[in-house]
Image (cartoon, rainbow, N blue to C red):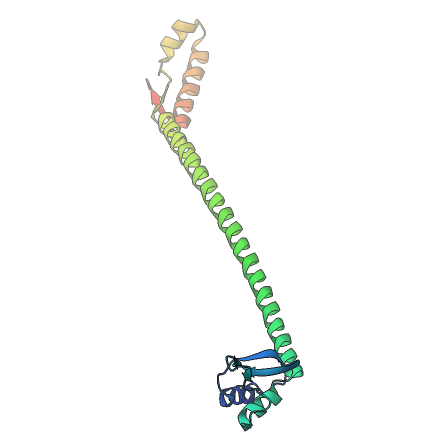
Length: 183
């Protein structure tokens, strides 16, 4: 930042004392005096000017705290304030982004829970339907050649072919895992 020797400035301020100073117009002239040292009594004015104190640490401090040093400190402080404001702006933006991300996550989790509930119902319904289908049995009665001939009025060859086809159908249906009634 600035090239001000802050440590030396602090040491000079501590050596100069912790007095507060004030600017005061006295008898038409302006003075920097120790705060509270101005006394006007019985026509006599008394005060303790800073510049006239024969105290080397105070003089050294006054020399160090010049307009250039003060402006540099103020500029540095302003830069720190700007950096702080920029960091706060980033922090606020990140907070807003986090809030938005959290809201999106909660909405997504809610949708997932709703979809999970829906698909668990679909799976349960499908499982139930599969169980129902597996529990069903096809009704293919086993007929003899004579019964087929009697019922259809066709020849023995036709009845034997029909019975053989029926037997094959029953065999294939059972091979597919389907129950067959009446056979």
